[in-house]
Length: 86
Image 1: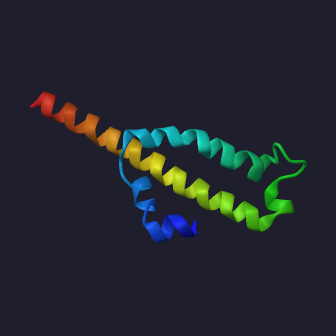
Image 2: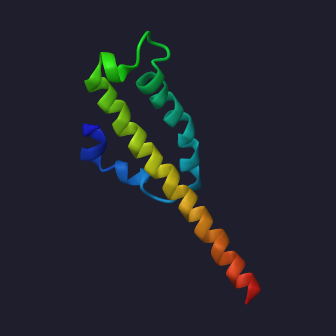
């Protein structure tokens, strides 16, 4: 997290690239240990709260990236539909 912040690479996640939709895969892998405990015996939120916070941070970062990508796709298609009608 510190390296992402210092190098300002987190900004890449906040753009509307279609490739950000691939982050759905890491969202799932971040949520599994945190919420349901797979592959561990218990959820991380109960056993390792600090590690769970890191997982939740990445979940939020990846989710924002996916939502930004979906928003840009929606806007492109919506503008294309309005331009086609005119």
